[in-house]
Length: 230
Image (cartoon, rainbow, N blue to C red; front, side, top):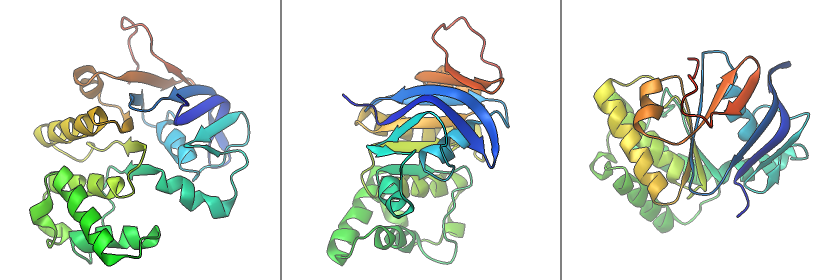
């Protein structure tokens, strides 16, 4: 199998500054991978590089068959259709219903047939247990429900990999646990997950491969006895 995400000797930028030097990382289909570390250690910059929001100027980088070093601006939307992104602050459009939020994404990514769009919206809402919330406005939902809708949005284009950037950061412990269980169930169904977190309890309770960012490096933790700095 080819990796969905591949970095080799990649320098990761935040603006014009290098925050991670020489990143080596492969994410294979169906894997659950954590990127952990202190605030400001470069975790989110890796995610932004994967989505081509940050440039990759040195080293190798491939995401879902797209070469990040040679990626043309007009091809960035096609890259982003191959991945689903979940944010800490949900980023729902507050002036429209749940259904209209999802419809907006489908139209923006090229879906034209309304019957097919409606069926896809129903399918993703069903998969996250939110089918009865389609006509609700975001402000009528709890934080956990809004994050479930955000996960549904990430699933719309049937991505090979989901990028979750601190998806439980604004949630209480019980709700965060529910979101992690949902992500794990999606992973068990075959979708790879790359999750950024600084919460040790999460990656200890829900095991996966762990990459630790510290000292301008991001390396895989292969020895369970090594203490991860958070």
